[in-house]
Amino acid sequence: MGCAEIISLPEVRARKQWDALRQQLHARFDQWLDGLEEQFQEPEPTLAAVTDIVWTLRQALTGGLTETIVEHAYLGEHTRKQVNCARCDRLLPARGPVRRTVETMVGPVELERPYFSCTGCRLGVYPLDDALGLAAGRTQLDVQQAAAKLVIEVPYEEAQTLFSDLTGVGLGSERMHTLTNHVAEGLTVLDVAPSRDEIERRIAAVAAGRHRRPVLGLGIDGAYVPTRPDSARGRRPGQGRQRAKRARWHGQWRDAKGFRFYVMDGDRIGLCSVGIRCKMRNNSARRSSRSKRRA
Image 1 (cartoon, rainbow, N blue to C red):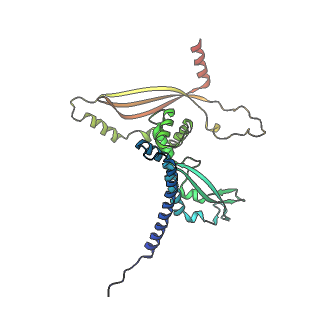
Image 2: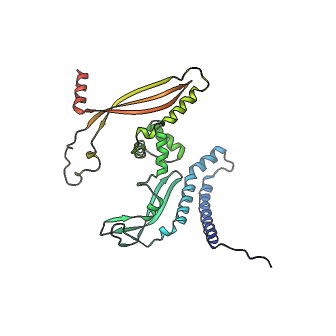
Image 3: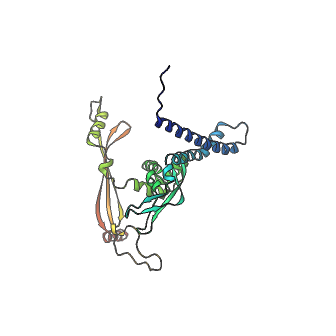
């Protein structure tokens, strides 16, 4: 008589859950195939025509697959009936569901989740949003990071066109500027500049196998930039029936100087270090300098 096989209950449950997810994903793919079938009008399309159709419909597929995976992985959050208030610990019943569509690199993802509101604390929460780590607004972190990587290489207007052509996600130049500032919030020159060991490594790599020492270059440029105090940030009263008043704060101009150290490596420039120095200059001095230039 042979030995009995030991079956792990957690493995069986995991297998059943994965099989259920596969069936849901196959259903999503069948829906996408129906849309793909409608796009093919020619019996023998060219390769360019096929890739263009698939490229146009790709985010409908990847976004739909993402929706299915999220719904399957967070089934408990989708069906949650109650939650405790984070402030008063009161038990809150579920309301909704409320739909929300977010923009990701794989396409738009539509979420349907319960909403919980505490009337006493005036606090509303979406537990699924917190579990998924969603960013505020429609554009999510993967899109923001991809846009930030592109705009540091090319101007905003060019980055807007390239980003739309390469990813299929449309972002305006002003939106890309806002996202980049948000991603870079809190960074300083020391955070982005190479370390001392990295600088020495780059210099050694350029000087390897040469009799002469590498040429060190210094580039400096500057511009006047307008600034405003922290008290002027955010929303201010004046909306509605209250008449808006002139702000009491006075802006200032900063003389921003940027510099860059680099080593010459043949026809290439190897970056060593960068920095920015700002010098205060008030508005009156700025206006007096303008009047002198006009005179």
